[in-house]
Each structure stands twice: as structure tokens, then as C-alpha cells.
Image (cartoon, rainbow, N blue to C red; front, side, top):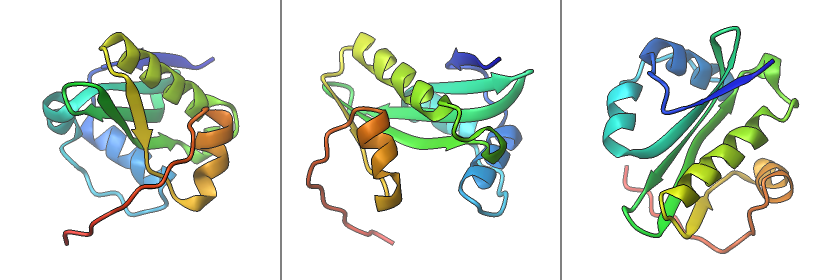
Length: 131
């Protein structure tokens, strides 16, 4: 049973660990709680027996546009629809906040997830590397 929680109290170590596992990187504890409180419209966590197993955040421009970031699911919980439900709930929260558009950037291997599973429409976009 997965329990979904919106704007839950974030433990920096727990979320940093999940993020590292999901993105196959080294754990570096980040100031997630402070960053989310300051910049996010909302965030959603998926919990199994009170263990964080999935996460997504939504940042926004304060108006019509919101942006999905950091969608992560623990590898042991993959392919169970958790990511799709996290994004659905994030979209619902964004709509309630008055946003008209929900954007997401993704790597090519995630196209089926965001387009087919989550219902995003592919668009052209551009990126400017700053560092």
C-alpha cells in the first residue's frame, strides 16, 4: 500500500538518498526542505510503511506556468505506477493553484513515461547551459 502525501515535512537525508538511488548517483545531502519551502509550488511524496519511495516537485512562475522537477521513484518500487500517480497529483495541485500549463523537460528515454503514461504533449524547447 502506497500513501501519497502533499507538502509533507521533508527530511533532507531521506530525500537526498532517494534522489541518488533513483538517478544512480552518489548521495550528497542537499537542503531539500529549505529549497522546497522557498521555491516550490508543491511537492508530493509516495510512502511505503512511512519510508519515502517516490517524490516529485513543482516549481512555478507565480502565474500560469508550473514545472515538474525531480520525479524520482526508488528502484525497488519501479514499474508500479507510483511515478505516474506522483505526476498526476502534482498536476492536480498545480491546477488547484490556478496554473494553466504544466511543463516538463526529460531525457529521450523518459518520453514514454511523460508522454504516454502522464499525458504530456511533446513540444520544442531549448536550453542554455550556464555552468
